[in-house]
Length: 130
Image (cartoon, rainbow, N blue to C red; front, side, top):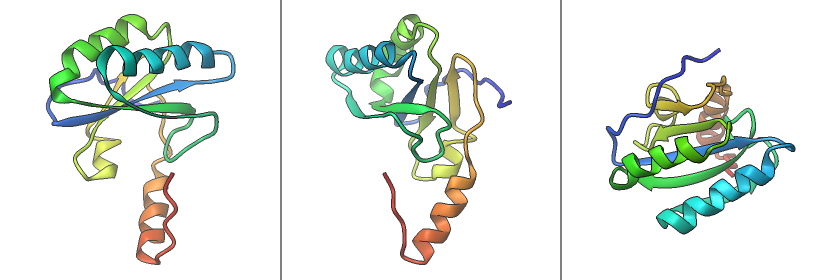
């Protein structure tokens, strides 16, 4: 199991990935929608499938250092038991999802092989990112 590291505001930009399943998808949808409405954040697609390195269904929310403290505190208070994976956006995807990775709730293991596969696909011109 992955070590649970609490979010730290030490980068310019972040993604929060709200993890959910069939039973928790309505709670997750409300949390994601409210993130956009209350904080004016960019909310990505609501994926009811596995995407990228994420081992759960997820929705991605993009935010910056300026919103970090208020948004993370709000997420913690309103996540209703959902796991939220928070990571920096530095341009180094592997580091962002390992060294600069933080958790609200239970940490889960990511599929880090995704980054190796993606690099090979990029080098061979067959990258397909969602």
